[in-house]
Image 1 (cartoon, rainbow, N blue to C red):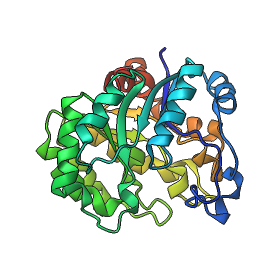
Image 2 (tube, helix red, strand yellow; image 1 turned 60 degrees about the vertical axis):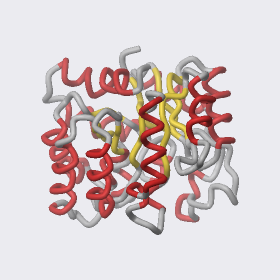
Image 3 (cartoon, helix red, strand yellow; image 1 turned 90 degrees about the horizontal axis):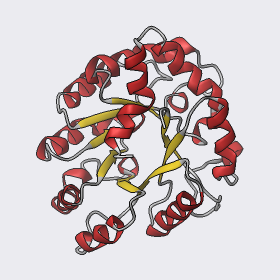
Image 4 (cartoon, rainbow, N blue to C red; image 1 turned 30 degrees about the vertical axis):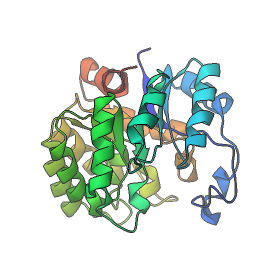
Length: 276
């Protein structure tokens, strides 16, 4: 297991539950299961994946755990749990008995309260994660980066990873404010960053390779090559690009890096972070 897609999703499409998949995303309004992903991994020289929750329920965890039991290439599950629940420690203890569950995330980007991650109950949940050695994926928009920096500063021994480089406004070519906030959060060495989800933040129809390079440069300069990892964000990426397109964007950029640095980005960092 050398090359890992550290961020992808599976689902059996449900019109009500998956209402975030809007009409302009019709191409992904269908089921996506391990049998659909495996050929793409093989064709692109990847060995394994980490699958991440797409809906916020413990039923979703059970669905992903069951898939991982059937398919060896699914090496990790990032699930969802109510971090603000009174019984959070008991819930996490239950998941600790399932080794494929590596961590959790909450869809903070969609919360009306933009600094929800700083609420005492949420922080109590993060403290519980640390006790059970679970990771936490930070899914946010750029306006939440400063709040997230405050969160990660409070838990220096907790492993965090920022999903989708915090979704900068690539389509509008806005970079300055996001860059400053990325550099501020990267100071905390317990924080990693997934170079993923970029194509969906660009113009879906007219994006070009060079649109992404300034953003990748910021992330690499801020985090170094030992705290970044590759994620396809498949199948969400398919509204704007093929799996091959997504791989090509990062392969072309990292072709100038050493073999060791490429190995870190395409697998070793994810292996360490998620304890795969």
